[in-house]
Length: 359
Image (cartoon, rainbow, N blue to C red; front, side, top):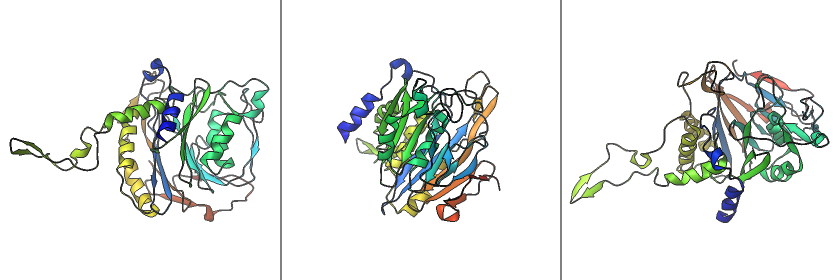
């Protein structure tokens, strides 16, 4: 496993110039917690420089989607009929997912990666076997049950750079996935090539590339959820000012590398528990990444605010139970938890269903 991870890290490596790219980014944070009963719980926050106007989108089995090809036209790309019913959060009222879970227990989301994401360049013939970047999670969740199936399918198709009007250009992101069988995967498109990495920790934030984060995590091996013993010098004891000294030095900014280290430490130090227990704990982990309104102001010239002066804040937070198939979400406007289960709606319906987050 260790050798395999090293190989994957090397395969995903990017140039030094890329690693030194600006680290400012829309501040999504995600993770997964394992239960002692074999279940898993996925959690993520969504932050963006402009309102995504997300709603809960329910997609039934057998629903036909049209892929967007390199010309930006719906239907010129790879079209498909959904195999698995899916629920999740969309953006701009469109039939896409930026986060979600399907009835087989495959869950995940798109996390913004404006500095690193560079998609493939299919030719006119290959365009018919491609989808636009914003359709990636939609395609995966409605077609596959496991990480292994995704890993087998994505190399056989293309993801193109067709721009998205509502996004103001190409929707650049990376994808994090977790299945009910215990596997996690990070999907990136770097330098026009598909890079898939086994996510042994199960955490994800934004730029730089995932390989950079994996290397950086080694700089924090001193951190621990267990308090350190007092320092003793010539018989004199020097205790910490309070409990919590095991995590002293934990980075606390909103930068994506700092958030990656924090969420990874919370996951690695989380005690064992049943899936139900981990679901409750997941909300508390996600609370640590809730960005208050006003903490990040984006100037219109920064490239992160959608071309306007704006504030980046936590628009919504998701916790998905891959065992019970509960998908729960709370929003900035409505802090109450909205929970959806696949037993609550017709999975064989003929149309998409949309539910506003603010009820």
